[in-house]
Length: 332
Ligand code: SD4
Image (cartoon, rainbow, N blue to C red; front, side):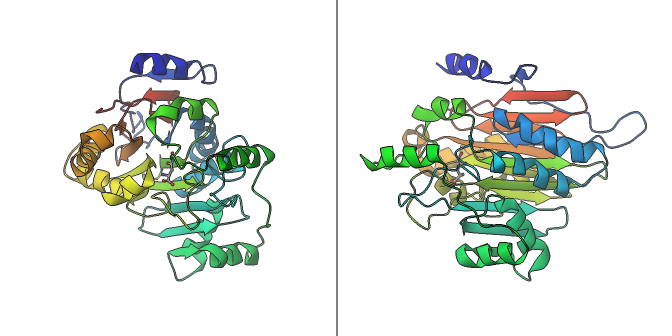
């Protein structure tokens, strides 16, 4: 079953993208002792986001600018129905966005329940750089965006409105990240993006942005904008980010947990695996089997890895060797 899903997924990828079952160890230092940049993202279609981040990294730009530019790609894409513009709405038809960003010096910014601004990550960065706070929600986050010249727009596309109206006929809440409909979602080219980068200066940064669970209750916030859950960066150790059912990732402070395992010497893939194991322990195998959760991680050396709870999770990677999609191993 897993193999069939894997093969189906491969056929959905842009040509030229390699699929690889192993966790890639990028060579992070070249012959001249220069640090080779690396960028990774949750989900195969985000090779496009990685390409944008890569442009920043190869020119010697910062990891912070790279992840910012990178995640703006799916945020602007109307066909990506779980990030930014075109995101599926909550049960009342409102598109509400969550995002966070973290640099190499423990600077953090996040927005939750942001409406009408497609680049939630830019607002998160504004919170980080232009306010004395680290988190802003709803109206306050919108106000910060408008005061900084961002334009208010309608984020609900025709396609997402149609899907919501269809959903209203039953109003059954079943999070899009459950395993059963995972393939359908990937086929539609979308999912939450978490991105991590290492720049030529040897610094790590990360960003995460989402419209959250489709048809969620109004005001619901998942893991994606929560530092330590959806994203965590420790420049001495490494960085991690998550995708999947946010309610579960928050429960174990997922990304922070992954980074702490790397601190204790685990490889990025093994650190992700330990976090997945903890979820299974916390929730029991029967519940865990129904959930989709994936972690990706990068250590200070630019080594990368990923792991998922159940099958079909992928990580997109860009390094000096080119772009790749890695099929994440899973525990269940
Ligand atoms: C959330 N973690 O809001 C996000 C959703 C997600 O793949 O990652 N979907 O819970």
